[in-house]
Image (cartoon, rainbow, N blue to C red; front, side, top):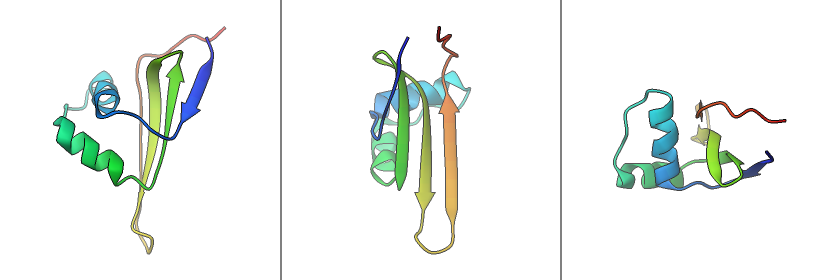
Amino acid sequence: MKISYSENMTPEEYNYLRKSVGWSEITPGQAKRGLENTTFLVAARAGEEIVAMGRVLFDYGYTLVLNTSAGELVRIS
């Protein structure tokens, strides 16, 4: 299965990954605002399914936060 990468994801995909790693689900509005205010984002998909993501939040001065999560592992052959 081919893995593709993009710089965007939906709030639903974000919540899917949150739930898959045991984090609590947030409201779609919270997810949307969080994604809109992300400095850098990369989303990985196996086919059409989101499997992982990484986000960077930066205040352009001093503080940087890196947030990552991965859904169920996908065997790639």
